[in-house]
Image 1 (spheres, one colour):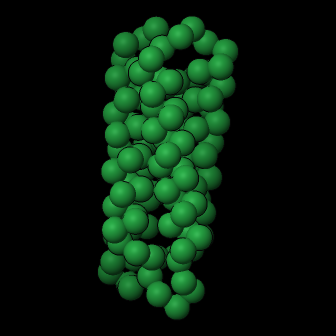
Image 2: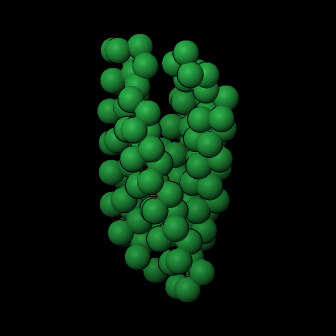
Length: 115
């Protein structure tokens, strides 16, 4: 389950990066891309939650879940403060992305640890 969560999260990260690049080039990213990114990321968090709750204890996976929860909260906050006539605030997006990357690294190490 953790490996599936990692695959979903990496897909979400690729979609998020594509959305950011498209937004920087065109001035405003397509909102639908952001929703697809969020769907993959939240699915990854849900799968990871299932693994953490039902599987053996793994501190790295638990930590990844907490950090990814913070990243999801940051993404929701970024969406909430976004104005329709302006692009999202880049500093919030970078903070959200950095938190997500840290969570992904924790998840990757937890999956490689294999407990």
